Amino acid sequence: MKIILNENQSDRMVEIIRRIVSTMDFEGGVKDFEVYPPYNEDEYPTYDIILNLNYDWIQENEFHAQQYLRNVKAGVRDKIIKFTGLKNIYVGNTMK
Image (cartoon, rainbow, N blue to C red):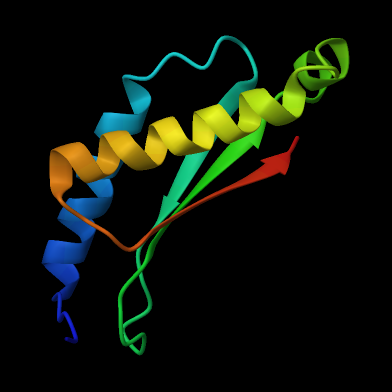
């Protein structure tokens, strides 16, 4: 089933996602994040949440970094699904 969101609905959902993620505590491993709305051409609109990792923190906690990152991504995804009901969510990361 194709889901159609108009631009206002999509912008509102981006703001809701931002508010949800901003309430989360990332223990220093994530500096900030960005939320991108889906492209209108997609059959299943996917909201992209990109976590900007703290390079220094990741280097200091190198041994646990991969597990930490998996847990954070899953936590972000689960919390967004819980509060919005969205299923098409991508949580990625980048290093800054």
